[in-house]
Length: 484
Image 1: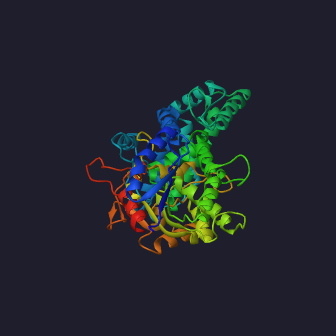
Image 2: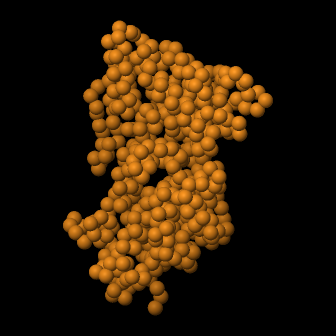
Image 3: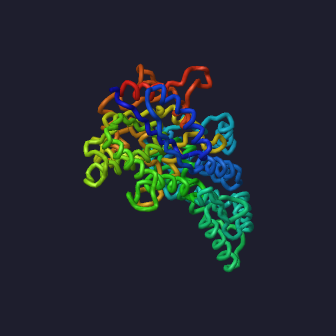
């Protein structure tokens, strides 16, 4: 008899439930045409909605615009300071305000300001006098001082807006800005201390000026070490991490990932959870002689879900009381633009690689990843860039930057900068077979073609905007029908 085929599709969790269910309906005939019975794991977070709403709002803030201009101006001056023209005194030749404004205008056209400016080989860290020059220029800026005063004047008790699941989406403490509540608290405290000392004006911006100095230092350091995401994008990331972290979707993102692990918690106990219950059912079917070929497809955060599933299945295989056969494996594992960290996937590979008969990832080249705009007015790179640069956390919960993600080509092509063990593990595994990664736009024949140019395009069917046929899901169909 012909082996039955089953596809377990883990969607990205980024959109609302209704949209995810519509996607499941759309993909059902695609999987059926490949001879497989599809099962969809759907969960929702509303992350894209939160990000889009908050980033649009932040982009309009006066304080944000002032900080971007100032930090960008001094960081660009530092990068221009190279070669024979390098200043002997360390006093930077800064671009003019007009030159910076012209670069920022590029955002309107969907381009990246200073997009072609690379860190020179002789770039060094920001010096103390260079940081002090920046801080005194910012302190002396009357618009900046006025705006800080207005933010403090508009301070109010904390107001929290949550997603449908009760996760914080907006955490506001001033009517004028989405800066994190603890930052507003510091600004308010700054002013009261200044007033208590009988001073007005300049002193009450001191804390924010020092924070801005730290931001500039970190931007230059990241660019120097090859950990920048392009100059402008790195400036935005560092401002958001330092001043707006409560409102950049970090909590929604963390909760979304947690849900993909929680579904396998407390197996066999009430309340019943979809993840472990499904694996139990799979075991029962196997005992009745049903051993289908199973393909796992994970889009975006769906790849995180798959890592937790593999861990649970590995434990079930070793449990004599679990109905799942001890030799159970998955025929194919397919990642579509995976938003999983190299740390989690490296751990998964170390422990559970034997559960995957074959692996293939479809994702973008770095050039296409960089061109995939998340929010035009503020962040011209992709969702994965934003997750890596702003939203992700270290395993201990600490904030981080440029966190290596499996779906981003930069971590595969620059082994010198990214020599960390977890990145090397993933890189070595993916590069061990040339069929393990397809970098869009690429066509190496059936099952090895992808022409998705946006994070959300990988599970799309039909035609691209230019009329060409979308090939990523065609490749996935081929893998299911013919094997990878």
